[in-house]
Image 1: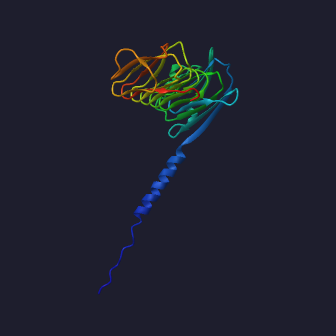
Image 2: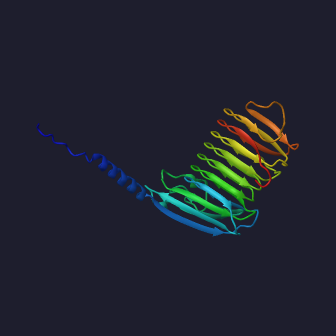
Image 3: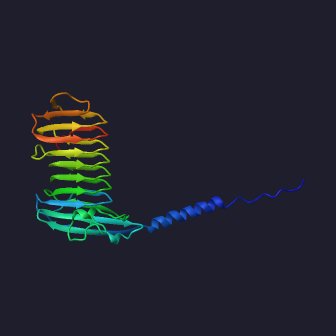
Length: 268
């Protein structure tokens, strides 16, 4: 019987895997990172603001009396050095922002700092603030998260979740993401808003707070864990009620998502 020659296995799968591995390594190696750090102090009652564009902003309670900030810049196509981290001492506090090329030429953190001109650098802010300092934290593409601070706090983003937890006032605003606020204050003067378009709007309120609640959704449900006294008709898309006789105003709004009022027990 004539012998048959058996062809050796093709090296193509191994070669393809090798090329893929090289591609992944090269892609990871192409990312460049740069870190900016800053430390400073603010008196209780003054405001610290941090504003990003592309990247997350996270703020937590500091263990000491100083503000500690780290900004991590990452870029592939564009160098991290093309984005400046600017510290602007204003009349009522301090603002730190990410300034992209052609975004804002003048000194200070102006509105133009949000123009990234297709720059692919992301900036993630990590901040610790001492007790009593008010916080404003915002970004455009990323999550804005303020946790367990003692001063009043406001968070905002466009594409990402807006989350805040404060012993004082707490408000959260986004467009594409969930808006969540844990409100430690029992009363406040100006209206507090928890607002989104595509996502849930949720607020945790202490049972002994005196609050007037208004909530609305278009495509979602209404839910409360607190014993609200309803004004008018409940739902199906709007709610108006009061807790402990009412007082300070809390507004929760979304279009595509649920509206939730949760029991924020003292110490939560």
